[in-house]
Image (cartoon, rainbow, N blue to C red; front, side, top):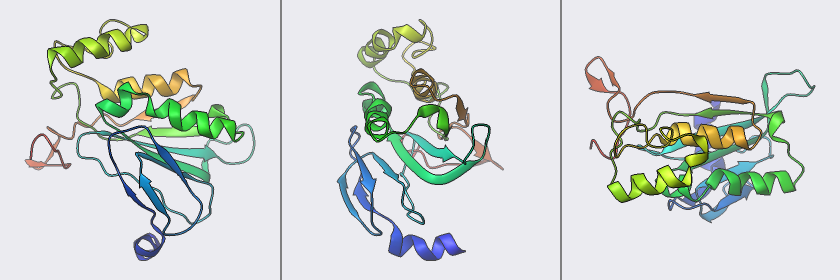
Length: 192
């Protein structure tokens, strides 16, 4: 396929570090450093993230016209949001940069991809308490739906909506327990 042929020569080079730094890709094969988010307005420049339980978030600007629902690809972004990036507000960090460049959240669509779900994501009592306090604005059972479990996909989707994104689709597939014909469907750091 065209994408598979171009990926090796056009992909940016970056190292994910569970932080909130993001880089703008302005040239093919760009060295982006230690970042957990990439965005570009450059035609034909791919951006991606790698996850194995953390939350992958893909964003794309809509096509021209106020009622166009299709993403144009004229601007795209990819975010890796683990618990550290989520708690530190990586989406706010990315969006503040894009908004400063004239972007408006209502003009973008977002997909929150497969990640470890609240069915399997058990954390320490301390971390669960921190998240319950930090995201209390969303409701008492939102960030921590059960004792010592986190719902990072829901937290990030809520964060996106609070930033003004109207179209946010969450793919509810747990990377740890989702199976296809009795075999794991996704990579999972915790399972493996």
